[in-house]
Length: 311
Image (tube, rainbow, N blue to C red; front, side, top):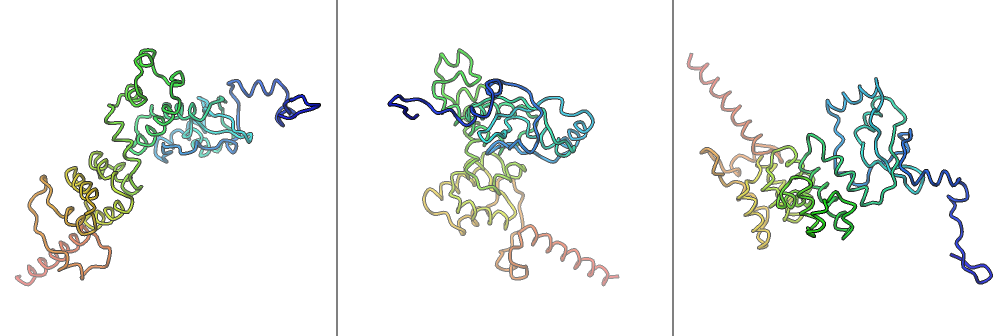
């Protein structure tokens, strides 16, 4: 805003000087356009992985033969490019298929509107990793909270709005997850990446992972090192003990190692040899499982040699 002869008036934007009114109106409307793949940027902090699996190869093959049948959803950026909202897999498959353009629905969306649409569209996938749910639920919940009373931007029903339910309650009803389950998933966002990868791989269960999420990053790194050395994951009971030790300021490498060495209720009786007696025979960093396998192979070799001597 500036003044001319004491009268305030607004200077026209640069965009208004070099575009027609029709072009400006069109930009505000939802429309479908063929856009260069190079002009489409990924959604910032997109929580869903674009996996190079068999399904991706099949999609690329279909696009190579028939093209993209369902347009992706993008929103315009201030620099004239576009941001992907829904369709990251179709974009990647198009790249693999050798396509240079992609049919896009161009829709003007606020940051929070874009987050809600992005999360909801991806939650329809058949397979969703725990880490994907964790960050997706967190992003959507934060967007819903920022909206405050503007529940018109969510898919909440009129009944939900009238009952003044919390954002988390609405999210629980929308996703079919319990209020507590959503809390657990969001806690996973506090895990360091290597521990979160174990949850995705199924080598660590959700409940102990939630307890471990309360440890500091340094404590989680110490735990990870001990887990790799012992080749194990803590049970739910052990994870609770680890959390309590951390809260009491008693968690260190020694207490972590001692706790992980405890026999779990579902474990069979095992022959235990103190690591101090055998570690000197192995390179530094050798895991407990690797040492066990080497010892078993050595015993098998010894048994074969003794049998050959008896003949």
